[in-house]
Length: 225
Length: 268
Image 1 (cartoon, rainbow over the protein chains, first blue to last red):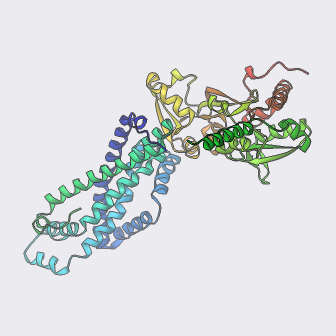
Image 2: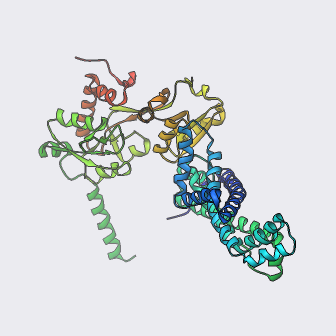
């Protein structure tokens, strides 16, 4: 078998467009999913009705396949009369999905905070908001940062299934090139290489973010992402 | 290379050349003698080939095959196949002929012979009643959904920029049909049969063909080098186009007549 990458490389604008859309989807879902997940983790910790709702959400999402969630949102909402574009549904479902995982990861981080530290904060006269920010959230995030980062990279890789609902991300672009050039092996080798590159870009981004967010970690030279 | 080696190679070549020439009686005589015709048909592509509630094969290709076997007074044996194994089935001798929505393409014609076209595969753009388009030019500003990598995808993608429309691609036919039925994609380009499938899934969508993109000739495929079988198949196709039987089959499954150009004047 001989390889011929030239016909595949000729399609680079498609790959570039696809890679940008994958990155866009990942960034939107990472940011929004982190906010939702953290809010859920705090609600889970507080308990009550809101905590119960969050528990149901987290369990429902973590126990069903992403593709099923995407189809439910794309075709289910359409059957109810809400016609959202493929990109919007892709971002929404990825956000909802990664939000549930983030909630579990952040909950673990929050639970690892010793009660004594919160009491210490109260003794020092910190306000409620200050305790949440300096004693609970940032240290919790610091503890679970590597898991968070890898969850978001996983999300980027999982975004490949949104090609099913016609989002023109990287995998969709590759599938198109593959069917037009009849060069599946070359196309998917290039696709894999592009995903590796995107993963590296994301990991670098998370490492840079950790550098800014966690000065203590920097001093201790701990692993970041 | 030694002299014996050279001699051996020549003998081997000569043997190969002999093996390549047909050394047996023709296929038509074989079929008639055996009393059974083995026809390769894919029964997983409704409505050309499918299983009914009793798990019996039915569909336009199935009925065409039954008609042929009946006319020739032969017992019919279906050789189940999938799309990619249709041609290998006749090449390897597992089946005598292919009646399985086999569109005539130059690439295929290099490997097998085709009879004259017995039906067509209509590729259309379809949608609900709210959309009024009658031609490619009318698609400006709209989005047409297709299944990725199909002939419709290739064709429309090439025309999209010049005609100002967008092509939306789903990974398979099932998703495409669901997208049409749920209203996620108000316009889809596919075969006539699938447009009907959208309507059956959601009658409220009232999906119907808007205009024809292409008519692909569908013919019976057979192994090369069987002139008598080919001639008899051609004769049978022409006769059944003339008497309207092939049109009846088409109409039964596709709810529309064969294109006028395919229907020779009726001969009683």
